[in-house]
Image (cartoon, rainbow, N blue to C red):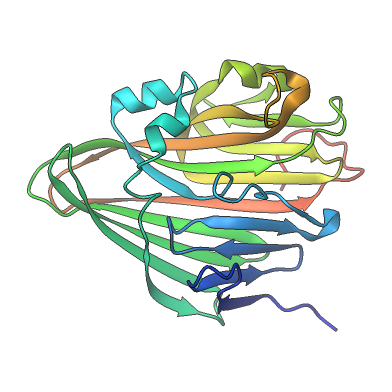
Length: 274
């Protein structure tokens, strides 16, 4: 028979809360109300969960940062900054669900204490043609100006089975750049990035992340637990996409991120996948 995409909701991880499952032809994505994040990504052709470290690795994890916090993250201090993130540590309210259109929307209304500002974040998941699209609307609901940085975090766990075949590339300032695995230890960051591509992951998986508006990107390595910070002990990568958010009272800004997984086995072409 012909495979049909689907959107299901159930307490899949038995935590007493309802989760959401997007099923496509080549992957499953599980979404939780806590942080409105993807807490499990199963890729079928390798039978693997790429967010298998529960509570630490996830996709579409949202943060709101000041400039000082952003600079500290660029130095590798991510968890000390984001542990109490007002977005990532909050429960998002489900506002709509359309199982035919594969569409799921969340809303978070919160208060930014350091600036005494009320703000809201609308987050909409939509699965189409094996591409997960996530659209954000960040709104300043106060009478004061908001100056901050909005960030979405991706943590992907993987084994680099062949150093010669695995590669990370991105398009920054209208130029494609290849990032060597060993450079992860220096926490490389880039500006004006429109897409990032990870090829040769586990030998035959390719991840592609595209943005509707150029963003800054910080790359942080994930090391094997209790292992030394060496290239051989890298077991994944954190990709942090961020935009400056300067919002006048009652104004909002929109950002959209596209995430795609596909089989790159025997695909030796370099450059952006179409």
